[in-house]
Amino acid sequence: MRVLVTGGAGFIGRQVVAALVDAGLKVRVLDALLPEVHPAQEPPAMPDGVEFIHGDVRDDTVVAAALRGVDLVSHQAAVVGRGREILDAARHVGCNDLGTATLLAAMARAGLGRLILASSVAVYGDGRYDCPEHGRGRPGARLKADLDAGRFDHACETCGSALVMVPLAEDDPREPPPNVYYITKLAQELLVAAWARETGAAAAILRYHHVYGPDMAYDSPYSGVAATFRSAVQRGEAPRVFEDGGPLRDFVHVSDVAAANMAVVGWAGPGTRAFNVATGTPHTIGELASALAAAGDGPPPIITGEYRVGDVRHIVASPDRLARELGWRPRVAFDAGAKELAHSPMRGAPS
Image (cartoon, rainbow, N blue to C red):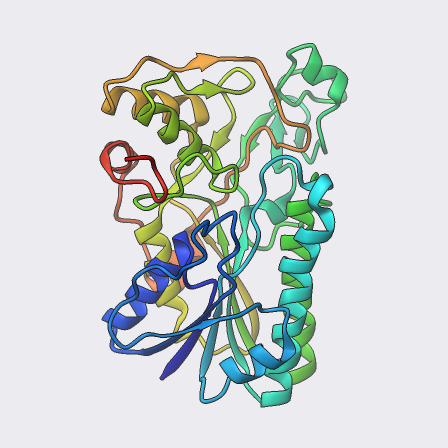
């Protein structure tokens, strides 16, 4: 089997490529080497036998050539969120949604009907919550006035009590996302669903949670909170933690994400099937900052009270479907992963 991995030079893509090669599969990588991710504009080292194509997934000609002789596409290429997406809305929509549409149209023309899509927990929007008295609800985006006043938790519209986060399942409704990046990930899923219905293809949709691990980019706004905290630790600075440090996230190690991709390589449909890729054990962003600072012998985190409009308070989903149907289970525990990250090299870090 030959697999095309779009975005295969990225943080997650490289781990997926390595796992595919270790399994004895032939791999071709298509990557645009975007400068914000690859400042040197040079591909990273790849395992022996991997074919590398420098090109953009939005380019019909490049994509058509990359698909020749391929049996399965692992679509990892995307521009990720950084909290200021409205300023880059055209770029996000172009890279993520036009890129996906270009790929799907080329696959349809080539008669290629198997896809793995790297999606995101972002498609669930602001999540699902319970009020102890009034039951389950979807509170929607938080108001700027509340954030300015330091009221970060969702409150019950009926009684005003703080709502309690409930883990989401794949069949829960996907809510209108609160920022541009989230919207592009939802649009990717909808495009893939339309492609699968129209062509009879099969697509496994992996909804990644907050991925971390070795080789994260240093001091990059595109790499997420784990890389931001880790970069501060490397500089000997206290990690700056937004809000009150309490937002819950599920931090999943990149090696476990690669293993999830391997688990769905053999999934052949029919149609689409979504799988949450998470540990099932959430932690606050404050806990992550503290774990990295302690492991790196740095100063403790500073809780700043700052916030980003469009961030969700808590977002956690259950990985039970992936475990039950395909036997995948995370292997890297939070404490061990944080200690590893605190001491592992970061891509692009100053020497």
